[in-house]
Image (tube, rainbow, N blue to C red; front, top):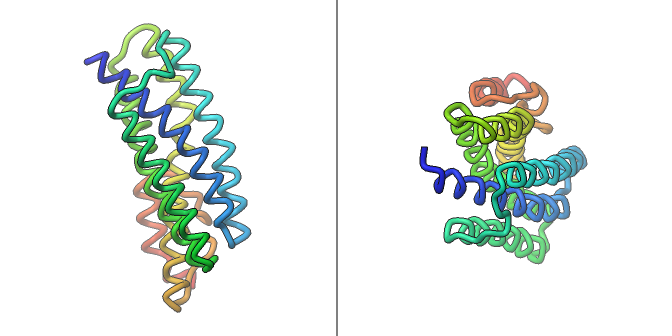
Length: 197
């Protein structure tokens, strides 16, 4: 394995979690649906904890959590842009539209976050010693929550759009109702949504 690239992945993972905290704080402000607001508040707390977990990995591996790389700068820029997009949507004065924008921003952020943790899981399988131990413990604690964040919010985003289009929506979405935590589960929930209308 290329240790410099593993460090880059961890730096980007830390920045993604830090940006995720800001993104969820703004998303909560955009949420109109009470169930969605509650869920995003829970995800905010989990994301704050995920940041702590990544910082613990940095401490255990004696890495500098303040190191800035070009890749980390880009991750920060994207996160800041998602927060800015939600701010723009709120200022436009249509709360339902702002909620949809927020759901899309969360899905974009969680897609990167999900990939980071998937890669951390892959690295943990090949790593040895302290790195294997630190990454395995972090991955095992976080991965299921990351799956839920991505698949549930993608369901919310789809159903909020369907509702905005004037069609019958399933709210909370099937992914939420079926407690989906896998891509296969998300696909099945989406395929079965018609039966829930």
